[in-house]
Image: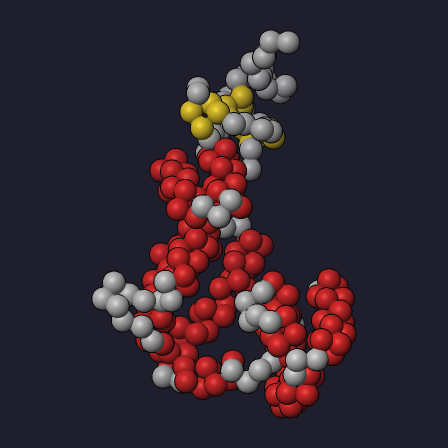
Length: 241
């Protein structure tokens, strides 16, 4: 079946497709009636931002972050205010920063250098993604970078050493999942920051948790039974939040 040109049902005018609109919208060139367009992959033989975003996501899934960065940059030449591309560049570059242990080009390391590198990546990519993103997505982006922003701010205040000591106080969730940066621990920290910290009772629970967690974590030790039991409970809680 041959492809037919799209015409407006309202006035019969030609529907113009915005090839840089990742949400897939078009509109009549005359009466401006909006239309939803699906699966626009190329226009006049050229890749759209939507198809490039899909290619970038596939590259990330394949572990090829360098190629993903190329795709994200290509998207920005088409649509400079594409929040998905800016956020993709942030996640890739944040991964590079971590891989190179936050070492600058002169070989310097340490909390101050780490904060400077983290802040540069946040300012260059993450905050631009937040600027261009819809309100609900911007809120999610802010939640994802909150810990990095807190670290940078703690270094600026000069109390990063206190933050480091606090993080090393073997939290139960970190001990159970074996990582401070896994998805489950991120979800629990987000619940703490976005819900518990907003009311008096929740802040009391947080203080109590930090008070008892080192002792409980020591008692858990390397017990696979205790770790398995607590992990099942936390997994169930994470699913509900």
